[in-house]
Length: 208
Image (tube, rainbow, N blue to C red; front, side, top):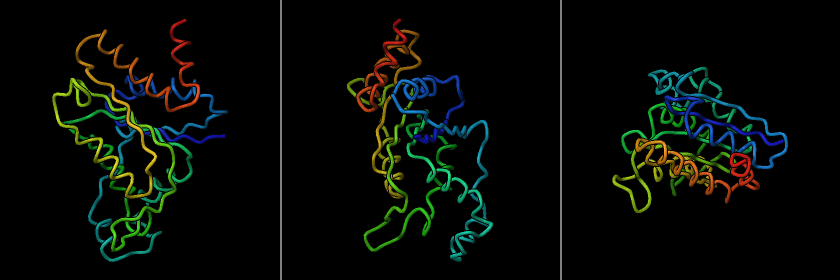
């Protein structure tokens, strides 16, 4: 059994193109009896990082201190899964606030990373991570009209806790009509098929 954690970070929730494509890909991947845990970071927002958390960090409180309750819950949830899917829009060139808050809870010194003279060393076991990024415009490839701060930031942030097996799949040009949306989904599906075994079966099923 493969345990998959799916983080949904956009305002369209399970109606988003990225979410639907993620679920299609998992279903067609050939993974035996996948156990999917969905966390919708917009429908069920996380509490903000407050003063108590900040004081607990700076005072080097015990790892099981009450102030770290949400942080610990999210880190354990991540540790208990074998694969990570992140479905996110690009908001103003980078990740949305909901995903940033998840990272703020999960990236915690002495728990998910260790500070060393060489910098942060991740303490979380690496796992395959698939990130579907939706955008109204174009941020990758020949048609890109804006700078992409999302991809390098999210890759670096995840690497800081030990997750380096990260793959990005853009869903671009979604404001340019139904044909553009269909093309974006098709391209992302093809890229996913190259990364996940048997994912191409999804394309065949939809064409029938």
